Length: 248
Ligand code: SAM
Image (spheres, rainbow, N blue to C red):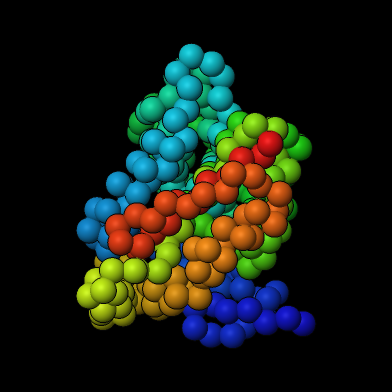
């Protein structure tokens, strides 16, 4: 059986998803608060950059699939930018993250526009060519078989559909890299312990960022899945990259 990484540990490929699921079951109730604290609010700007790139239309129907969509952040932001014909499906493998998302959707009166579905990015339960756009924010790093997730993204997009992925990347600003590493390893796990009672899940988070392919290599994987006009935009000195591709 093949191995893969779970943070800095080598684990059998078949075991990774269950370990990832434990992380998000554990952090779900305080996931959104922790995002604000550990990114110093920056995750909002990164998600807004994705929605700006998505540019959902105001005057015609538009179907978005937000995979690994967790508590719904991308879908809510896209709904705000879009017109009345906008519909988002948030698909995530974790029922606890989805439960938080459903509550947040109700509080925002977005139940009509945003629906929540449990599912695995590697084997989506949606027909071919069903969506105008596929987004995945800070999710693909957690998926054991990234190539399967990318080919599923391609399959469910309509021709002319857009793929957008936000993921942590590699800091490329001298000086910032050292501060970022210090903050990642010395501040985030203790902060995770204080806020969620779980330092280990946040250690996984910072380790998994280091294991994810470099932005150029990931762009190649997107191309290999069939996408065209693949580009990447570095955000906040390389902390995050926004990847884009089209199904043409
Ligand atoms: N997209 C949301 C955001 O930006 O706030 C949530 C991102 S959270 C860091 C990662 C999400 O990926 C978790 O909700 C987790 O359950 C989900 N996930 C992990 N593996 C998955 C898989 N194989 N299929 C679908 N979702 C998955």
